[in-house]
Image (cartoon, rainbow, N blue to C red; front, side):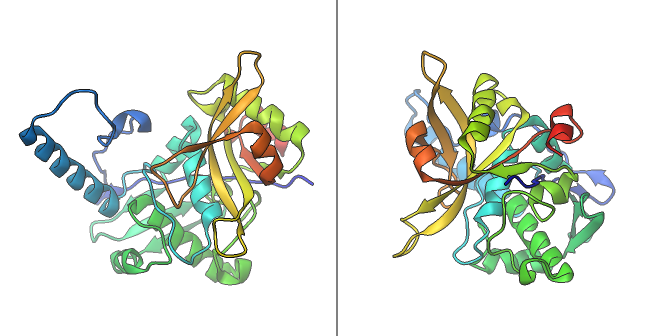
Length: 287
């Protein structure tokens, strides 16, 4: 059975002006990458300080870019963080994330839910309290503001009993739909998701405009394990053009993408979600 799915993101403005943050390729803006250059003691100290300042900026100032929100202890919203991370691998998703959050002169935020045709206000006080609440994600202001806004929306509309704990990868309650109004799908049929993965592999710079998510049974989560949603970041082919590996990102370890062989990916899959560019011919066919 295939359902609908969607996602999007954030940005912010100060007063009536856009905050001056250049939207760059997320793979080129990080200062935390390894370097083959041998650094002096002074250079290492300066780099460490710069990294600290940058992490502090990302934590406290939304910039429309998802950069490593680490999942909290009890919100159970892996689906939400997975959708953010997958959207950030597509051009349309980056644009949606860049334009989803605005900030007023008093420091309060508005998250724009295009799909629900409503705006959600997150006060500066709510944001600061969220930073101290271990159930929410940490490390990325954009991710945290989206979590708070989605929870407020769910409570107001009595969706999922007002909780962001657990959700489908598709449908009108997904992040993609809330932020873009576009619908995607979810499936567990290999003949469907294999074709999606192949398309993503052939256009790796933008994942063919497809934001894909993956639910599997994670035995590392608790004594009995739990169904866990993660982001599909990249698909790798072998020399014959078959799927060799799938690169995934777990919101519990947002700085550490990892690989699964395609065989393992298939064996462990419980559900696969995918969303294409809003208003595209592909999206219209899905709907």
